[in-house]
Picture 1 (spheres, rainbow, N blue to C red):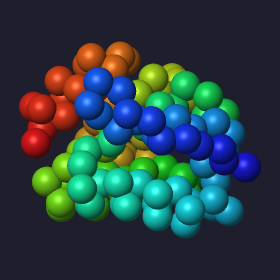
Picture 2 (cartoon, rainbow, N blue to C red):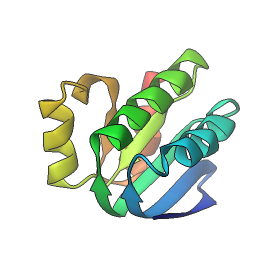
Picture 3 (tube, rainbow, N blue to C red):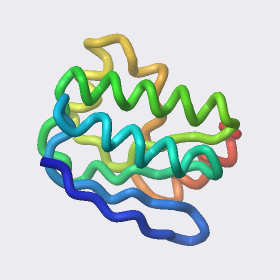
Picture 4 (spheres, helix red, strand yellow):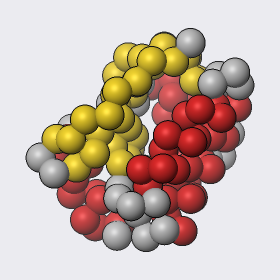
Length: 113
């Protein structure tokens, strides 16, 4: 199960998620992220995401690519070590942008767009 809320922090959209990003919720996740990133960049708070399967990782790559194609970015905020390791193992690390603070995420949005 995936719970979420969308907030605005210092002029940037922030998607706060909790739960698991698995095959049964990726369609909803992709829809939410794509709706936002058609218009603006998005920071996704992964602090309370407890599980990300390969389907979830593929969804992250897909929405990141979608955002980039629209001259926007998806920034993954506070990823845990397991997410970083999985991204490296699946060889998708270079398709994703990670940050350890909101300020770092905002700088990366400006740098990459």
